[in-house]
Image (cartoon, rainbow, N blue to C red):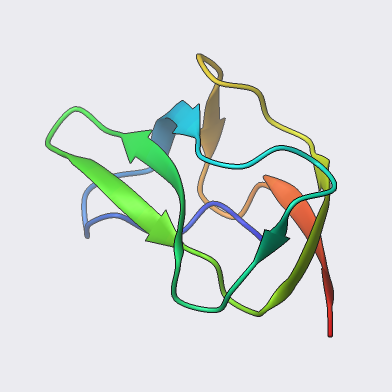
Length: 75
C-alpha cells in the first residue's frame, strides 16, 4: 500500500493516524488511516481485504507520494 496522490499540486502528506494495528483484519474500502496535506485531511481506504502485516510509516511522519506506507497480506 503506497502513499496516494491527494491532489494535483500535492507531493507529500503526513500520516495523522492509523485506525488499525499490525495483525488486524481489514476489509477493502474500509478506512485504514488518515493523511493530512497542506490542503485537506483525508481518510484512505484499504485497497484490498486481508491482514495488516506491517506499518512502515508511523503517525506524525511526512512522506512523498508513492512511498510504501504499510503491507496488507491479501486473502
